[in-house]
Length: 568
Ligand code: NOJ
Figure 1 (cartoon, rainbow, N blue to C red):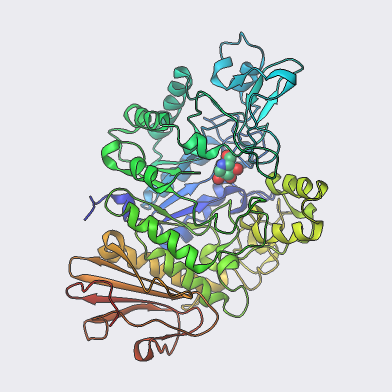
Figure 2: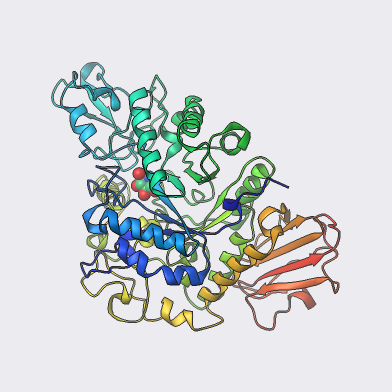
């Protein structure tokens, strides 16, 4: 069994502050709003909050373009509000992770404004500046993730600065010792204030290779350099230095967002012997419905692919490292809309998806609204979007003629990040009880049916189901530390697996389809030593006939020796 640690045993809840709860009637969620809702989060049973950026920002990427690492943005409250939130969380046994965004800053950050002021600025080298090539060409053919080139020239004949996301988000130069020391000092100050760790934004991309070489251009006309950057071995040196400078000796947790990181590298990063990060978010499963035009397609994730990817990561990290489990976050469309059923089977399929994830090995993350089955937003017009990524993609693909407008709008409905960012649905009151002003973005029109208030009092709700899953993890060590073994791998409709620890074995069986499906009970699971921990279907025929109802999911616990993953 792996070494026990508190962060392996907990469930994390991710808060997107702008859309969580508005306490001061300005249409924007805020920090006092989170404090007000702590009673709910405590009742739900989560152990840790990850709070997306609340620092002053340039306002281009909803806080992921920071202009001051050490203050709180006025729209979210004050430092006193933050300290009160932290104290109140700690008083009720909840830990708090902040978002650490140190691959880039805002172009409004004083460091960048100084760096930009000229080649002799003492802060010039905190960012990545290069001469252009002949014929006024950028230093390489790298593309930015939010569209266009990754290099912007500072005036005619000037140097170019690197920005992997947008020109408003210049990349920091981690090769500069002074920059690294500034970041470590800033992290230490937050930890001294009492925060319990960090979720680290695109941390896999901080180490830019010396030669930022051209690569094969995609349909956009540019090369996506993420794999080249993530493979730079200097990354490991920076992470180790960060640990020894800031984290050693503190009982905190680090969760890295591991864009473009493969399993082998993830094993190195999360192996405790290497002193890098505690756990990673990997994205291979989230990228299964992408294509040549990035995520802008109507491809859907196929269950056999999802199983293949999840099994590989579950087994690959098993004895070495640790993974962060998620179906949703603020950058992803709602998983219920993606692989579940928004209609007739909304509740059953939401519970099934939750079961499938929460019984895996790793630390589960719940994204706000997931616990009540919030769905994608029926966007009909580009004016309803708030996220610059999708707005720019819309104009880029439609104006270039690559994707017709109607199709692009459909892809946006399916995949855009704003799907996750609509206000939290607290009640059937106007604006879903999120605000009593005009919200910064429209609420999903399904809030009269889908909201916390309705579900909180109903024992068979999705919310109650999440509460039970969290409670199960707290009570059964096999859910936290058990080995993971895939079961019935070739079944195209059912995702099943076993977890085993000492003399307990858990069997988890999830029907990902709207039709009844079969999956044979594993050997040894038909006796009296088997308990049904949860089943989302009344009058299940599973134990009697190995037949799963549409979107049924069942968790069985067996006491006694483990027989291996064989059919009965
Ligand atoms: C990943 C964050 O999750 C996303 O929201 C953001 O746009 C990019 N990193 C850039 O910071």
